[in-house]
Length: 340
Image (cartoon, rainbow, N blue to C red; front, side):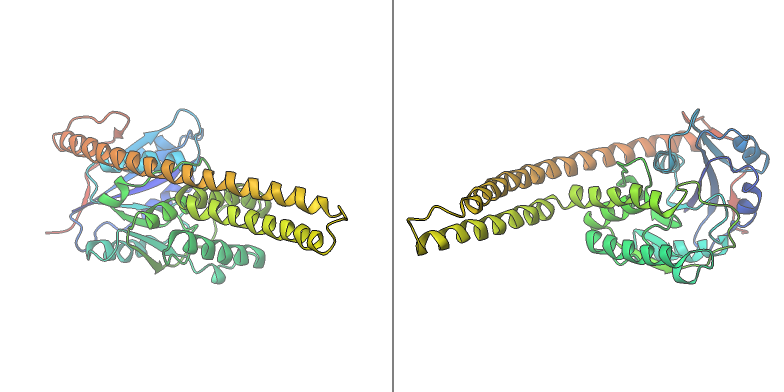
Protein backbone atom coordinates (compact mmCIF):
# COMPACT_ATOMS: atom_id res chain seq x y z
CA UNK A 1 0.00 0.00 0.00
CA UNK A 2 1.55 3.27 -1.15
CA UNK A 3 0.72 6.75 0.09
CA UNK A 4 1.57 9.83 -1.98
CA UNK A 5 1.43 13.16 -0.13
CA UNK A 6 1.03 15.97 -2.64
CA UNK A 7 1.81 19.58 -1.78
CA UNK A 8 0.92 22.39 -4.22
CA UNK A 9 3.47 25.20 -3.89
CA UNK A 10 3.83 28.81 -4.98
CA UNK A 11 7.00 30.49 -3.74
CA UNK A 12 7.19 28.31 -0.63
CA UNK A 13 10.96 28.01 -0.30
CA UNK A 14 10.95 29.27 3.27
CA UNK A 15 7.84 27.34 4.34
CA UNK A 16 8.77 23.91 2.95
CA UNK A 17 11.28 22.83 5.63
CA UNK A 18 8.69 23.05 8.41
CA UNK A 19 5.94 21.45 6.34
CA UNK A 20 8.11 18.50 5.31
CA UNK A 21 9.54 17.99 8.80
CA UNK A 22 5.98 17.68 10.13
CA UNK A 23 5.00 14.82 7.80
CA UNK A 24 4.83 11.27 9.22
CA UNK A 25 7.56 8.87 8.10
CA UNK A 26 5.55 5.70 8.82
CA UNK A 27 1.82 4.90 9.09
CA UNK A 28 0.17 1.64 10.09
CA UNK A 29 -1.29 -0.03 7.01
CA UNK A 30 0.93 1.95 4.63
CA UNK A 31 4.04 0.22 3.25
CA UNK A 32 5.73 3.27 1.78
CA UNK A 33 5.26 7.04 1.65
CA UNK A 34 6.41 9.41 -1.07
CA UNK A 35 6.13 13.21 -1.20
CA UNK A 36 5.18 15.02 -4.39
CA UNK A 37 5.68 18.76 -4.83
CA UNK A 38 3.69 20.64 -7.49
CA UNK A 39 5.55 23.89 -8.18
CA UNK A 40 3.06 26.38 -9.63
CA UNK A 41 5.61 28.56 -11.43
CA UNK A 42 7.54 29.63 -8.32
CA UNK A 43 10.30 32.20 -8.79
CA UNK A 44 12.10 31.72 -5.47
CA UNK A 45 13.73 28.35 -6.12
CA UNK A 46 11.02 26.25 -4.47
CA UNK A 47 11.75 23.19 -6.62
CA UNK A 48 15.47 23.28 -5.92
CA UNK A 49 14.85 23.70 -2.21
CA UNK A 50 12.41 20.79 -2.26
CA UNK A 51 14.98 18.54 -3.93
CA UNK A 52 17.58 19.53 -1.33
CA UNK A 53 15.12 18.64 1.44
CA UNK A 54 14.67 15.13 0.06
CA UNK A 55 11.21 15.17 -1.54
CA UNK A 56 10.71 12.23 -3.85
CA UNK A 57 9.02 13.81 -6.88
CA UNK A 58 8.54 17.28 -8.37
CA UNK A 59 6.11 18.54 -11.00
CA UNK A 60 6.94 22.08 -12.11
CA UNK A 61 4.97 24.58 -14.20
CA UNK A 62 6.95 27.11 -16.22
CA UNK A 63 4.45 29.80 -15.21
CA UNK A 64 1.65 30.11 -12.70
CA UNK A 65 -1.54 28.21 -13.63
CA UNK A 66 -3.50 28.44 -10.39
CA UNK A 67 -4.34 26.19 -7.46
CA UNK A 68 -6.89 24.08 -9.34
CA UNK A 69 -4.41 23.21 -12.09
CA UNK A 70 -1.73 22.40 -9.51
CA UNK A 71 -4.10 20.13 -7.60
CA UNK A 72 -5.17 18.24 -10.72
CA UNK A 73 -1.58 17.91 -11.92
CA UNK A 74 -0.75 16.42 -8.53
CA UNK A 75 -3.62 13.93 -8.77
CA UNK A 76 -2.50 12.81 -12.23
CA UNK A 77 1.12 12.49 -11.10
CA UNK A 78 0.21 10.62 -7.90
CA UNK A 79 -1.82 8.10 -9.90
CA UNK A 80 1.03 7.62 -12.36
CA UNK A 81 3.42 7.08 -9.46
CA UNK A 82 1.25 4.21 -8.23
CA UNK A 83 -0.32 5.88 -5.21
CA UNK A 84 -3.04 3.78 -3.61
CA UNK A 85 -3.97 6.63 -1.25
CA UNK A 86 -3.37 10.32 -1.97
CA UNK A 87 -3.22 13.04 0.68
CA UNK A 88 -3.35 16.72 -0.26
CA UNK A 89 -1.94 19.25 2.19
CA UNK A 90 -0.67 22.85 2.15
CA UNK A 91 2.94 23.99 1.93
CA UNK A 92 2.48 26.66 4.61
CA UNK A 93 2.09 23.89 7.24
CA UNK A 94 -1.44 25.03 8.11
CA UNK A 95 -2.41 21.41 8.72
CA UNK A 96 -0.71 19.12 11.21
CA UNK A 97 1.18 16.20 9.77
CA UNK A 98 0.35 14.14 12.84
CA UNK A 99 -3.28 14.04 11.65
CA UNK A 100 -2.44 12.29 8.38
CA UNK A 101 -2.63 8.75 9.87
CA UNK A 102 -6.14 9.53 11.15
CA UNK A 103 -7.04 11.06 7.79
CA UNK A 104 -6.16 7.93 5.80
CA UNK A 105 -7.58 5.44 8.34
CA UNK A 106 -11.21 5.53 7.02
CA UNK A 107 -9.93 4.84 3.51
CA UNK A 108 -7.76 1.94 4.65
CA UNK A 109 -10.78 0.56 6.54
CA UNK A 110 -12.96 0.84 3.42
CA UNK A 111 -15.44 3.24 5.06
CA UNK A 112 -14.77 6.24 2.85
CA UNK A 113 -13.56 7.21 -0.60
CA UNK A 114 -12.65 10.77 0.41
CA UNK A 115 -11.86 12.13 3.89
CA UNK A 116 -11.88 15.91 4.42
CA UNK A 117 -10.18 17.46 7.43
CA UNK A 118 -12.49 19.70 9.46
CA UNK A 119 -10.46 22.65 10.74
CA UNK A 120 -13.29 23.58 13.15
CA UNK A 121 -13.10 27.14 11.84
CA UNK A 122 -15.02 28.59 14.79
CA UNK A 123 -11.96 27.88 16.94
CA UNK A 124 -9.30 29.37 14.62
CA UNK A 125 -8.02 32.57 16.23
CA UNK A 126 -7.03 34.48 13.08
CA UNK A 127 -10.43 33.95 11.41
CA UNK A 128 -12.64 37.02 11.76
CA UNK A 129 -16.29 36.64 12.87
CA UNK A 130 -17.40 37.45 9.31
CA UNK A 131 -15.10 34.81 7.84
CA UNK A 132 -16.31 32.22 10.34
CA UNK A 133 -19.93 32.97 9.49
CA UNK A 134 -19.23 32.76 5.76
CA UNK A 135 -17.40 29.47 6.23
CA UNK A 136 -20.40 28.01 8.07
CA UNK A 137 -22.85 29.30 5.47
CA UNK A 138 -20.75 28.13 2.52
CA UNK A 139 -20.27 24.66 3.98
CA UNK A 140 -24.02 24.34 4.58
CA UNK A 141 -24.70 25.25 0.95
CA UNK A 142 -22.11 22.74 -0.31
CA UNK A 143 -23.54 20.00 1.93
CA UNK A 144 -26.98 20.60 0.48
CA UNK A 145 -25.77 20.70 -3.13
CA UNK A 146 -23.43 17.70 -2.83
CA UNK A 147 -25.63 15.57 -0.55
CA UNK A 148 -22.66 14.97 1.77
CA UNK A 149 -21.90 15.76 5.41
CA UNK A 150 -18.60 17.57 4.92
CA UNK A 151 -18.27 20.07 7.77
CA UNK A 152 -15.48 22.22 6.29
CA UNK A 153 -16.00 22.45 2.54
CA UNK A 154 -13.03 24.75 1.84
CA UNK A 155 -10.48 22.61 3.67
CA UNK A 156 -7.62 21.51 1.43
CA UNK A 157 -6.52 18.81 3.87
CA UNK A 158 -8.00 15.65 2.44
CA UNK A 159 -7.24 12.04 1.63
CA UNK A 160 -8.53 10.12 -1.41
CA UNK A 161 -8.49 6.53 -2.51
CA UNK A 162 -6.97 5.78 -5.90
CA UNK A 163 -10.38 5.02 -7.39
CA UNK A 164 -11.92 8.24 -6.09
CA UNK A 165 -8.98 10.35 -7.29
CA UNK A 166 -9.27 8.94 -10.80
CA UNK A 167 -12.86 10.25 -11.01
CA UNK A 168 -12.26 13.80 -9.78
CA UNK A 169 -12.14 16.65 -12.30
CA UNK A 170 -12.00 20.39 -11.69
CA UNK A 171 -13.51 22.76 -14.25
CA UNK A 172 -12.90 26.13 -12.56
CA UNK A 173 -9.53 27.88 -12.29
CA UNK A 174 -9.93 29.25 -8.75
CA UNK A 175 -10.03 26.37 -6.28
CA UNK A 176 -10.63 22.63 -6.26
CA UNK A 177 -12.12 22.37 -2.76
CA UNK A 178 -15.82 23.01 -3.36
CA UNK A 179 -16.20 21.55 -6.83
CA UNK A 180 -14.58 18.20 -6.00
CA UNK A 181 -16.97 17.74 -3.06
CA UNK A 182 -20.01 18.54 -5.19
CA UNK A 183 -18.82 16.32 -8.03
CA UNK A 184 -17.84 13.44 -5.76
CA UNK A 185 -21.03 13.65 -3.75
CA UNK A 186 -23.23 13.63 -6.84
CA UNK A 187 -21.21 10.68 -8.18
CA UNK A 188 -22.01 8.66 -5.07
CA UNK A 189 -18.59 8.71 -3.41
CA UNK A 190 -18.51 8.11 0.33
CA UNK A 191 -17.26 11.22 2.14
CA UNK A 192 -16.18 11.43 5.75
CA UNK A 193 -15.42 14.56 7.75
CA UNK A 194 -12.65 14.34 10.36
CA UNK A 195 -11.85 17.02 12.97
CA UNK A 196 -8.20 18.07 12.67
CA UNK A 197 -5.96 20.62 14.31
CA UNK A 198 -4.19 23.54 12.66
CA UNK A 199 -0.82 25.15 13.23
CA UNK A 200 -0.35 28.89 13.88
CA UNK A 201 -0.63 31.03 10.76
CA UNK A 202 2.73 31.64 9.07
CA UNK A 203 1.61 33.89 6.20
CA UNK A 204 -1.48 35.45 4.61
CA UNK A 205 -3.50 33.47 2.09
CA UNK A 206 -2.30 33.74 -1.51
CA UNK A 207 -5.55 32.43 -2.93
CA UNK A 208 -7.46 35.65 -2.13
CA UNK A 209 -6.62 38.97 -0.49
CA UNK A 210 -9.89 39.59 1.35
CA UNK A 211 -13.41 38.37 1.94
CA UNK A 212 -14.80 40.49 -0.91
CA UNK A 213 -12.47 38.83 -3.40
CA UNK A 214 -13.19 35.41 -1.88
CA UNK A 215 -16.95 35.85 -2.31
CA UNK A 216 -16.52 37.27 -5.80
CA UNK A 217 -14.46 34.28 -6.91
CA UNK A 218 -15.82 31.37 -4.87
CA UNK A 219 -19.49 32.35 -5.02
CA UNK A 220 -19.72 31.75 -8.79
CA UNK A 221 -17.89 28.44 -8.32
CA UNK A 222 -20.64 27.20 -5.97
CA UNK A 223 -23.39 28.45 -8.29
CA UNK A 224 -21.72 26.93 -11.34
CA UNK A 225 -21.19 23.62 -9.58
CA UNK A 226 -24.86 23.58 -8.55
CA UNK A 227 -25.96 24.29 -12.11
CA UNK A 228 -23.52 21.77 -13.56
CA UNK A 229 -24.33 18.84 -11.31
CA UNK A 230 -28.01 19.61 -10.60
CA UNK A 231 -29.18 21.25 -13.84
CA UNK A 232 -32.79 20.05 -13.75
CA UNK A 233 -33.34 21.33 -10.20
CA UNK A 234 -31.66 24.65 -11.06
CA UNK A 235 -33.58 25.48 -14.21
CA UNK A 236 -36.85 23.85 -13.17
CA UNK A 237 -36.99 26.12 -10.11
CA UNK A 238 -36.45 29.15 -12.33
CA UNK A 239 -39.09 27.95 -14.81
CA UNK A 240 -41.55 27.38 -11.98
CA UNK A 241 -40.98 30.92 -10.68
CA UNK A 242 -41.71 32.39 -14.11
CA UNK A 243 -44.75 30.13 -14.50
CA UNK A 244 -46.27 31.19 -11.18
CA UNK A 245 -45.59 34.87 -11.88
CA UNK A 246 -47.17 34.53 -15.32
CA UNK A 247 -50.27 32.76 -13.99
CA UNK A 248 -50.77 35.38 -11.28
CA UNK A 249 -50.44 38.29 -13.73
CA UNK A 250 -52.68 36.73 -16.38
CA UNK A 251 -55.18 35.73 -13.67
CA UNK A 252 -55.21 39.34 -12.43
CA UNK A 253 -56.05 40.58 -15.91
CA UNK A 254 -58.80 37.97 -16.36
CA UNK A 255 -60.31 38.81 -12.96
CA UNK A 256 -60.72 42.49 -13.77
CA UNK A 257 -61.82 41.71 -17.33
CA UNK A 258 -64.55 39.38 -16.02
CA UNK A 259 -65.81 42.11 -13.69
CA UNK A 260 -66.01 44.73 -16.45
CA UNK A 261 -65.51 43.40 -20.01
CA UNK A 262 -66.12 46.86 -21.44
CA UNK A 263 -63.07 48.24 -19.65
CA UNK A 264 -59.71 47.45 -21.29
CA UNK A 265 -57.45 48.27 -18.33
CA UNK A 266 -54.75 46.18 -16.71
CA UNK A 267 -53.32 45.26 -20.10
CA UNK A 268 -49.82 45.57 -18.57
CA UNK A 269 -50.57 42.52 -16.40
CA UNK A 270 -51.54 40.55 -19.50
CA UNK A 271 -48.38 41.60 -21.35
CA UNK A 272 -46.05 40.80 -18.47
CA UNK A 273 -47.92 37.58 -17.67
CA UNK A 274 -47.65 36.26 -21.22
CA UNK A 275 -43.97 37.21 -21.24
CA UNK A 276 -43.40 35.26 -18.01
CA UNK A 277 -45.22 32.22 -19.41
CA UNK A 278 -43.07 32.31 -22.56
CA UNK A 279 -39.93 32.55 -20.42
CA UNK A 280 -41.16 29.62 -18.32
CA UNK A 281 -41.46 27.50 -21.46
CA UNK A 282 -38.02 28.55 -22.69
CA UNK A 283 -36.34 27.85 -19.34
CA UNK A 284 -38.13 24.49 -19.22
CA UNK A 285 -36.59 23.61 -22.57
CA UNK A 286 -33.20 24.73 -21.25
CA UNK A 287 -33.69 22.41 -18.25
CA UNK A 288 -34.29 19.46 -20.60
CA UNK A 289 -31.24 20.32 -22.72
CA UNK A 290 -29.10 20.81 -19.59
CA UNK A 291 -30.08 17.36 -18.36
CA UNK A 292 -29.04 15.84 -21.69
CA UNK A 293 -25.73 17.73 -21.54
CA UNK A 294 -25.20 16.55 -17.96
CA UNK A 295 -25.72 12.95 -19.10
CA UNK A 296 -23.10 13.46 -21.81
CA UNK A 297 -20.72 15.01 -19.29
CA UNK A 298 -21.12 12.01 -16.97
CA UNK A 299 -20.32 9.66 -19.85
CA UNK A 300 -17.25 11.70 -20.80
CA UNK A 301 -16.05 11.82 -17.20
CA UNK A 302 -16.45 8.04 -16.98
CA UNK A 303 -14.37 7.60 -20.14
CA UNK A 304 -11.72 10.02 -18.87
CA UNK A 305 -11.61 8.21 -15.52
CA UNK A 306 -11.01 4.89 -17.28
CA UNK A 307 -8.28 6.44 -19.43
CA UNK A 308 -6.70 8.01 -16.37
CA UNK A 309 -6.68 4.67 -14.53
CA UNK A 310 -5.15 2.93 -17.56
CA UNK A 311 -2.50 5.62 -17.95
CA UNK A 312 -1.79 5.46 -14.23
CA UNK A 313 -1.32 1.68 -14.31
CA UNK A 314 1.07 1.84 -17.28
CA UNK A 315 3.07 4.71 -15.77
CA UNK A 316 3.20 3.04 -12.34
CA UNK A 317 4.63 -0.12 -13.89
CA UNK A 318 7.25 1.95 -15.69
CA UNK A 319 8.06 3.74 -12.42
CA UNK A 320 8.56 0.42 -10.62
CA UNK A 321 11.01 -0.56 -13.34
CA UNK A 322 12.94 2.63 -12.69
CA UNK A 323 11.94 4.32 -15.92
CA UNK A 324 11.34 8.10 -15.97
CA UNK A 325 7.76 9.38 -16.18
CA UNK A 326 7.04 12.24 -18.53
CA UNK A 327 6.44 15.50 -16.67
CA UNK A 328 7.59 14.19 -13.28
CA UNK A 329 11.08 14.77 -11.94
CA UNK A 330 12.05 12.04 -9.50
CA UNK A 331 14.91 12.97 -7.20
CA UNK A 332 15.96 9.42 -6.38
CA UNK A 333 15.29 9.84 -2.67
CA UNK A 334 14.24 6.49 -1.16
CA UNK A 335 10.57 6.17 -0.10
CA UNK A 336 9.78 6.35 3.59
CA UNK A 337 9.04 2.78 4.65
CA UNK A 338 7.81 1.16 7.83
CA UNK A 339 10.38 -0.56 9.94
CA UNK A 340 10.22 -4.37 9.41
